[in-house]
Length: 601
Ligand SMILES: Nc1ncnc2c1ncn2[C@@H]1O[C@H](COP(=O)(O)OP(=O)(O)O)[C@@H](O)[C@H]1O
Ligand SMILES: [Mg+2]
Image 1 (cartoon, rainbow, N blue to C red):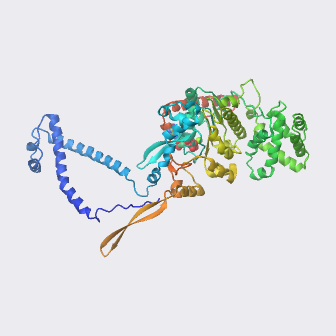
Image 2 (cartoon, helix red, strand yellow; image 1 turned 60 degrees about the horizontal axis):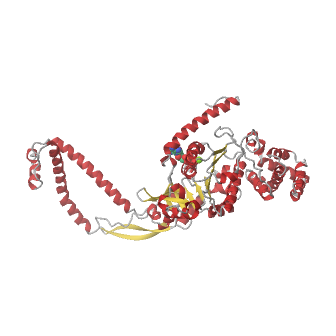
Image 3 (cartoon, rainbow, N blue to C red; image 1 turned 45 degrees about the vertical axis):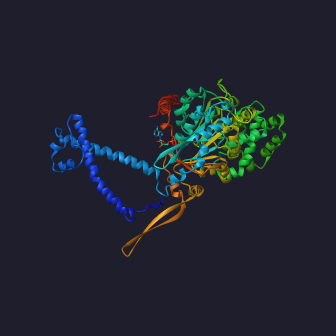
């Protein structure tokens, strides 16, 4: 990091230097003597002795070592001990005051000071956010701003970072913002983003995760706070909890567009880029036709799985014709009767995309079974419930997580339209590990209007490139552009992103002092150098717990993130984690015994 020395005039080279030296030399002995006298006075006060009055006689007597004259009747070792304590306390006090003063006068070139000097941040502060919440949320119209709790007005992003490692005001994302966060693994995605946002949400929440940590930490704590239900979607036994409900992806699937969207979630998870490019669109059309045939004939995803294994069976074509989807029927007929290599390529890609439908344990969550209650996205949108969608990274269940998230968001959008435009309380969609387990194809496009519907997406990625692998360059650029709050945390190793961020953060003038020695004389010049407030290397090395915040309409800010373990619910969450971890361990043991596998160590 390039740091300027600053323009401070050196004491030795200025005219004032000598004067200060004389002043200090004159006063130091007097102050020192007075401290000794004060120590003696304190001891005398405590032991009932007396002390000479402070003055020249005291100094002379002390210099001669006549302690029986300076403090008769008071123990000299006690005076010395008091003196040491007094000097220590005084030094600590002076140091603290000096630190406080120094903090107020940061070094020239200090990026924290440069970014903290930003009046535009007021629009992210508590007052402006509360005003916005009152304007956005019908239920708060009559509320007094001062009485609103932080949870009612927005999502806490962190605190502005001030010079001297101090924290400034709390900064929020309002309930019409859209958020994207980038952080490396173990840099606080779950602890500073998912957990606090899900916990503070005043309404329904969709939260994705590839680990049990989110559910363990807050499922019960949040349910107790809001009284809402916990909907845990865990087909891969991340938590080993039993299935308590099911969801029908085919429910209400009556248009080609809806079926196409559902098929898109499956195709987007095909890892083989070449195959995806070549056969992806046709595989999506095929899945679309099969979903539509099943949905409109009272069949389930079981049948779709069967039809995928039998490319020649005419049943889905007949069902589409019966349901009035003539064009889809002829499209499917064309696929089935096409060249064998083409047909096999399309069917094989569709089977790869829909591998979830060949896994009985995953299929159980999306096909009617065992009299379990069915999840209703419409009812969810107006509840205070929480939908936890768990799946191991890049697993077969990922398309179902994306589909369930998408369906629920669209149900919420419909509700918002019926409620006059906005959902109140808003729906928070915390997509942790979005690129691995919740690939929604048109998420970048959704970003441009979700906020205005009271649906607040928080997409959490490990890096910009991770987003590019899912949505492509234009898609990721659209997501970046449409997110009104961008949080860039620790461990960003993308050279392009850090360079771009350095440019976006901007430059400032830094005074540079240079000293030259010629002919035994020194001379000092101060010049201004224009340099980046934060260089790319500084951004890459942002410490864990801090982040850059790029908010629309204001200059970038450095913030201190607020992990749950330093928040007000830390004790309750720690207890919940303990209980949940025990429950997971017990359930895992039962699971392995049931399957006749050796128990976990
Ligand atoms: N209760 C806790 N107290 C202190 N540190 C914690 C606690 N829980 C997690 N951490 C630390 O917080 C860091 C970020 O964790 P996490 O948010 O889970 O990372 P990720 O970005 O992979 O989601 C990790 O280094 C972890 O050790
Ligand atoms: Mg995590």
